[in-house]
Length: 206
Image 1 (cartoon, rainbow, N blue to C red):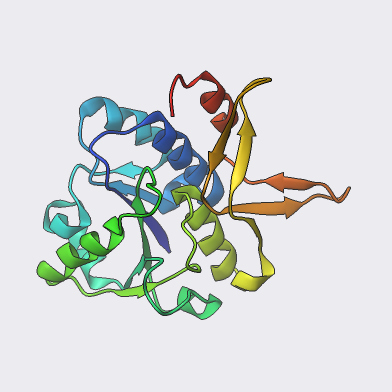
Image 2: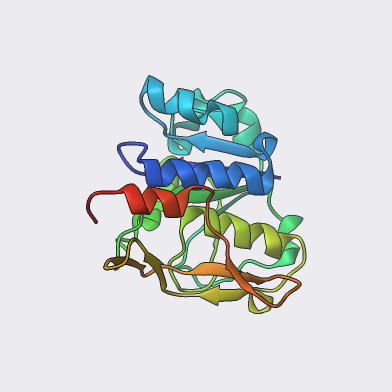
């Protein structure tokens, strides 16, 4: 089982990089493929966290082992599709594809556009959702992994908008869904990438 992150932004923004690094930690470097990554520097940054390809899956005839990819069963995670991911999908699919996007609010449905490209190339796949709320890419991978391991979507606790305090007078509101886990002391902990809060505090504009 592999997790493919199809990078859908023109650049590898620091925000995305932190999410991608988190994904590698969550599922393991050997299970992650980053596709559609342009630029030598971006590819070098991601090389330690998964296998990196310049090409999109939509042009996967140029990807190493592409015949293996195309012969496998592919599932694209899309919040606007009808069917929800379940534990049974672990045996139905070999590749789970996520759109690597620096999210917009409201969402621009760029994953749907990516699916259109796959269809145009004759690549067969199915789609699943993780609920209708927009998640960060790393949150989507985290949730998918938990479901494929046996949990139901309803078993997971979420916070749909989070507020990060930047300093005494400023805070940032992120209108995306994040996972909340409860520790042994009953404290709620947001599942966020390492260094993410520090990055927000140093960022000059939003």
